[in-house]
Length: 518
Ligand code: HEM
Image (cartoon, rainbow, N blue to C red; front, side):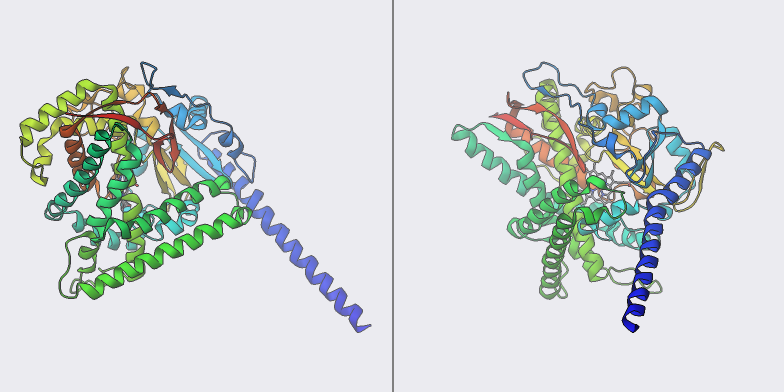
């Protein structure tokens, strides 16, 4: 009798548990997102109709109709928005330059209108923006709570500690290391060319070289030690990209448990490598801080009267990961797209070589000469416009945001700023928007003649703009100067023009180029 009662009680408990579970799931999957959907509609936003719990994912996953042109084609199209973001391009045509789409049960407002962006961000300080929780969680093994992801007063503290590390005197000290790594790469190329192999996959080469540069300038460590971290970070990036097919769908991590666990393990391995780099550094440089980024962060002491102006070891590990990841791929891709554009516009190779001769002469480039390379600055901006390595900027509203009395962005809504679209918008750049015309930056070096000041955002906007843009610009100019003074370059017939997104914007099949010594 007693056992029957126990069994009945167990069944009842199970039934209640299952009921709660079903209620929880239906709340997460349907009720809350439908309420949010209705609210966004009432607040003035339209967009493609989602079907919860996957949102608009089905349409986003449809096979991309990629424009692939081989290098033998005379013109390579730079009109890439509909290639890299075909779904956004389609929805924009239907719903305008501001619309809502759904990654699973997460609402994203897609913005390709600089005026809307200006109004939306006018009264919001850097520390009051959030970052989409769905990306923060998924990319946790990669960035942790580093500067890219941290929010609020913690962001202010991190930014306050990190900004001085990129000050002009510190950058000056790093220029020599940049020259050293780039020269090693070019010496390797000379040897390859002499042995009859003039074709080089530039993307692969430059990712290694900018990796070496950040390993040395960031952590004062050799390329080999850096390689261990990079190898794992790269694997992590690929796993995260492949495993996030259902980003935004509740419990989607469990659908890809194997990959989620693999990412977490890799993240832990990277953390251990970095902790040992930091510990070694603390041991070896007692009283003698080194002049690299890590040394500068470690040498920070709490300012009297302002406790908490330093970073903990855990925070340092996350910042190191952020530097490792953010600090080499973006610059490498900026250089990669530049070499594609210089290979297809050889007259600009000539113009830049002339400028280098005028500004630098026969001596070695150093940090003080970089600002004099004006035309190279136009080329860099034009490349970042056509092929922004960071193809979008993300935010999350931490409060209701009123825009123009017409729209209210509810608290917790995610925001996706479509940089590729804004950089290719004929309304703001004119009819030649998809042409490579560095001279558009001649009379307007900051905005390239864009009709709206927020239409050109290669480094983001507001207080959260890229903290290392001067470092990146110096590295770009030093490496490009050294390449152009030793080689001329043309496109290999093997090149296929297929820009693609793997977190960053990259050429899917690499960039094979033919180099010729000058
Ligand atoms: C051409 C090269 C680069 C490009 C195009 C680029 C682009 C960007 C963009 C678009 C953002 C987001 C800004 C926003 O949310 O408004 C960003 C943030 C950031 N970048 Fe860069 N970046 C480059 C190089 C670098 C380098 C070399 C480093 C490190 C050594 C770096 C470290 C960071 C960090 C830490 C942030 C977060 C800043 C914050 O939220 O306060 N970036 N970058």
